[in-house]
Length: 338
Image (cartoon, rainbow, N blue to C red; front, side):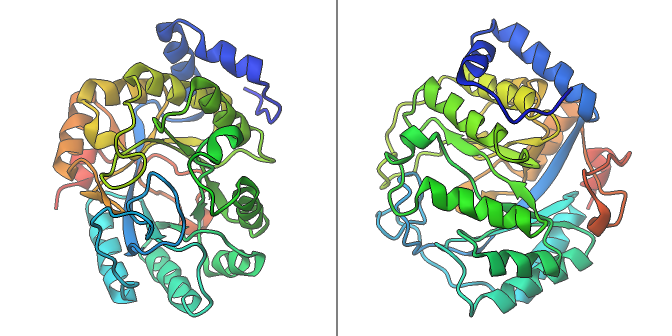
């Protein structure tokens, strides 16, 4: 299947408008052309600095502007990051992601951040960070330290964006993604659905992602986790099949990207998660927390994997050479046996 960066709104609308079973069947076919059919990338996400973020993202508990009852924490020590990364590896994770509630990293933080990258990579894990906006020189330093992925989501369509965030422009986000690509780091970028947007906004988000100069290597599709005290704390729920459709359309449009079933998974029943996997989702976070929001427990995921007969991807090549992750014939239950 030819990779495209020229998707039109009408083409994406036509994908969404297909009968549900036709759409997910097509998405599964595309998925099997590029990935092992029953393999799921498993990652762990750790908050390295929590709360007091100056941004006004209306969905986020970490914004200093809202009374979400979240207690702020300072940047954690490098040795704690190493311990958490080793525990994640021992539990079957192949990728370790570190997130900080910053608008952008300060220069005083960069030596610690770079050390985190180097130490986690030395454990044989892929590394990912989300630190806010990056200047070109910061992206270059992260690349030289060996960072594999940088996460910076577009969140929603350009048209709906201003209703969710006002302190950082859409162009700011695109500029950071450009800096990351120029530094030779793989891009992780997706969005959040269920924020009160319309389907036309979900179409706009996917069009922006797929029409980037190169497709993101990883595309997280998040279901809004409603946080009391934030402006989106009581927004109407998104219809579950619409979420599955969004996963399927993302898989078809970006066939070689990992599509991550990300935030909001704790509220999904097993059947909905299974539909998402059939629709082409092939990446998850596990662990009790995604930064500050809850996530299914590891044992719950292990049992679901066993029911579905799917297993976790494991790196089989040196981390610095790995693109994409290759399947290792280790079942989830073996990787999780600790």
